[in-house]
Image (cartoon, rainbow, N blue to C red; front, side, top):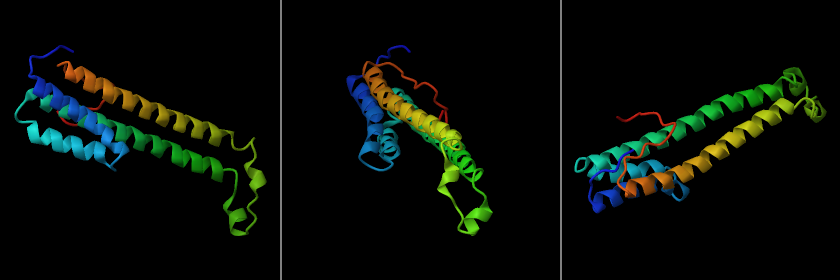
Length: 154
């Protein structure tokens, strides 16, 4: 987007809000708690800080939603793939055989697992670099909008 006439203090504070999402690597739910605290304390004093805080929170909430959707799709499919090869009668009669889960029967499981893990890893790597990129652009005074972000907060 375009550069804005803001003070260095506002630019630095907005960049700090972006970088505060990295606290998730040290503090559970730190990527939500610290940005909310930082954003909430200064959102009324600057439109630039308010915009940056909303973008960070929208991005973090979008990443959470995408992760949950990935789990909701992959786990039931994985369980269906396993239990479609083994009947419940065999499990009840203690007749569960590992041989039924041979490579010919678990290809769907492997594909789903690899796709789910691959998408999740790509998403987390992209999230890491986008947070840094957002902080850099914000420190230059630009309104930065994360890609593929759902606007929960407007």
